[in-house]
Length: 302
Image (tube, rainbow, N blue to C red):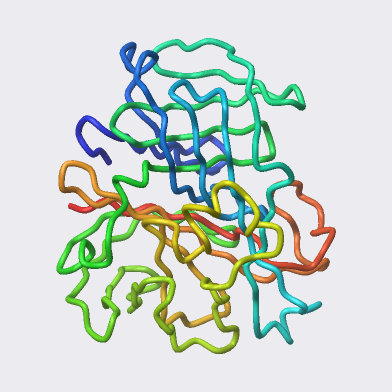
């Protein structure tokens, strides 16, 4: 699946039946000299993570970085009594200086303070694919100037892939309607047919078991940061949406962007997992009960 001039998705299947989804750019020499400075909304990719979404602010060559990483906390100790959640600020240090490892064909190599190698594909288009060290997943991001609004989802047709942690990958199609009471109905060919609602983070979802977190609240530790000056609460991060009318206790965030009048949406599903569940990233049980990434999906406007 391709958005011409911007992004490419490749699905691969190995001899053992394993599936992977690769998202990135066609390589470009000119991207190495692009000024990529700006603010970026991101969704984390990689099951088993508890850092799920947030913001990057990078300089022109991605060497000086500010970041705000968010996840979700709950007081629940088992899925049976999981009824609520709060947004948690998960950045150890907001500011980080990376060591320049060079750039080839648009791929920037950087080393963080822990000596770990980070790979980033960034171009002047505003799309940003970040590959973190093994076991840490990655991030799909876009410049906030490319952030979509809810109205951009109206009356569209989409194609996409879903990658859950408890089922095989699935290709699907989806269609959307018009905004009604702050929500857009989407019908997707998942599990034989699924009806969902897309809405802004501040719109009541109607879901109570569990309810979505209050995205207007300022997470502890975030309010005094530099990024909080421009984005005071999670609700102020451009291009983020949530999904309603879900059949289970999983909850979904979308990060959506517009390029050349084409809508691209990257989704992340999170669920409660306890110490009896297996962490797909390690193959061992989760060490702590909590809310973790349990799958990703991506939608391209047809």
